[in-house]
Length: 88
Image (tube, rainbow, N blue to C red; front, side):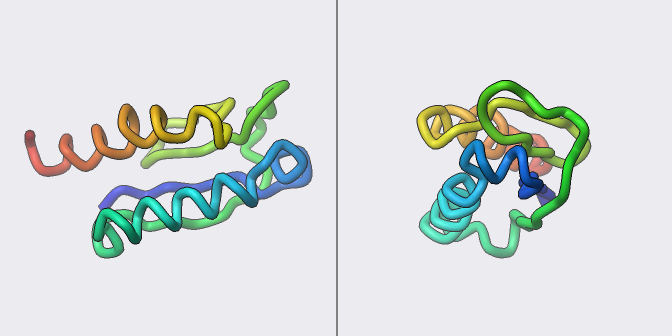
């Protein structure tokens, strides 16, 4: 299981966390990963950035996730984490 926490605190909310949440939900569903990726919201991770949303994948904190860079983030972080769990 890959644990993904999306910050929905006030700063990240203003920077687009609702759209980032929708993108995660869509990508998880479209890729049939409902049993492999757990999505949850979190309040401030203490890593506020000037742009984008803070997302924690397993225990690794990432800042600056936006709808514009989401696809790259999905491929480099989420898909990579899934492959690592499977030993690929």
